[in-house]
Image (cartoon, rainbow, N blue to C red; front, side):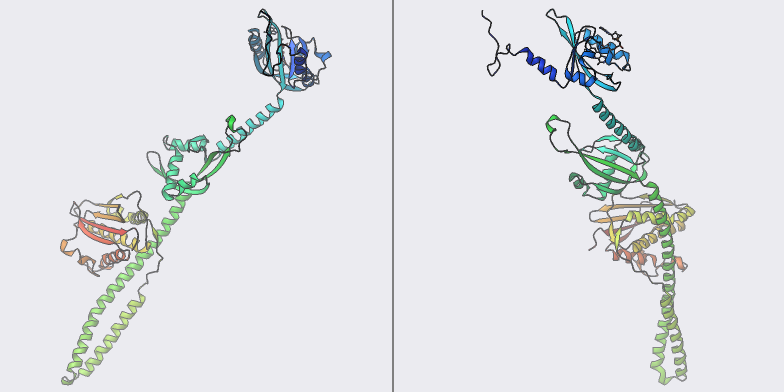
Amino acid sequence: MPHQPSTDRLGNEVDSIPSHLFESAVEQSPLAISITDLNANILYCNEAFTEVTGYSREEILGNNEAVLSYKSTPRHIYQEMWQVISDKRPWRGTLINRRKNGERYLAELMIAPVLDSEGEISHYLGLHRDGSGIHALQQRVANQKALIESVVDSAPDAIAVLDQNYKVLLDNHAYKKLVGDMRGGEPVVKLFAAIEEDDPGFAQLLKRRDGFNDREVECRLGREGARRWFSCSGTWFYECSSDADDFFRQPDVPYLMLSVHEITQQKRRQEEVRRNAMRALMAEEDLNTSMRETLSAAAYKLQEPLNMLNAAIALINKKRSCSEGSEQILQLLSEIREMGEEGLELLHRTMPHESGEENAQVNLNQLLHEVVQYTTPRLLAEGIVIEWRPESSLPPITGSPRQLRTLFRHLLNNAIEAIVDATDSSREIAIHSGREGEWVSFTISDSGNGIDESLRYKVFEPFFTTKHSFDRAHSGMGLTLVQEAANAHAGTIEIGDNDNGGCQIKLRLPIARP
Ligand code: FAD
């Protein structure tokens, strides 16, 4: 059968492609190309080879490729290279080479064995290029990465890079420590949940890929649930995808860099300062309240004889005509009345005024906690145990912090007094807070003797007291003020029994004030 020459799609005979075309292509290739015998003696090299090595063709032909060695490539690399190519397989690798002028360069080399018609190696084809520039660049990037990593790692703040599903891709030492503190939990999940609790719009903000700064959150970490505070900031940045499809695209893969600064120490200091200020304020309020109560009680007591005096004057006035000497008595009584009224006026004037206060958003759990803390020395002195069970997510209410504080302090003081009076009872006060629909509720329950059902309305009357001695502490104004404060906040207050026969006060305050 006659030989049918194979043709390409344009109809040219493939076999007829002239061999000088291959020669020119090899000669003009930008890669340094050499052909050696089986011992790596150079038989041919192209123009790029002479340019990269600095040797002319006359100088290099006939020499072994070893003349290019800088003698610093580890021995085992050559051994492995020879093993591979002797096995008729191509080898790729990097060698440290020396140019004719003694300069070092990194040769990215590929050696392919050339087989004869018997399938035996007849020559080796070497292709190499100077990879020093790329290597220097890669090294610089690697060094920079190492530097950034070590800086980030030694940063005192916890830093993590998250993908768009908030999965942690990279983190530093401080972040890993936070993971440890959380006993394996993911800090970012806990922190973001805490931020969202304070700001329900936070998830939307993240969706919009907006950054955020200094979001302060309180978290309970670990099994013991120690309270810790963190300030969180996040910045979005974008990277190109490494997919080939995205080669010509703008960077569009989002990442969130989260940095978490622990502010527990500062918060504790702030809390301490606030607590001290609160103690001073409560002590002042105590003093004012007790002065007001004492003076009010004195005024109340003084008002009674004055009323009787007025009645006596009216009576004498009526019978003045028929009794002798009544003018003088009348004169005397009027003078006494004037003196009494002056005294009463003086009492009213010396009464400390209640300072006006703007309404504010009040976290009642926190406020009650502060009142309990302020009362702790007295509780300890009386050996009373407090069971404090606050509702974890109690909404704030709008109100007067001073009035509400006074309210809780009176209730707590009443509970303590009731326990002290009931000498043989256990000494416990239980305080619970909760949410009932649009109301927040508090129950304060003591282990005293309770309040008789017949007195449960009367105890709210001014100056009504079940104590025998009338003194500053038992002026009978406490529950009146409690009722006033509850009314001012559109709340309700009820007195009941608890299971131990003690008193249980239930206070309800609306979340939104009508
Ligand atoms: P050598 O004594 O030459 O060899 C080191 C080890 O290689 C020996 O222990 C031996 O086990 C093995 N070995 C050497 N020759 C053979 C052989 N013929 N068959 C089997 N095993 C053998 N080297 C460079 O440094 N830079 C280059 O750019 C470079 N290009 C090359 C291109 C080609 C196509 C080939 C085939 C080799 C090239 N070499 C190159 C390798 C070079 O020939 C030397 O092997 C190498 O430089 C080490 O030289 P040496 O004198 O230190 O040790």
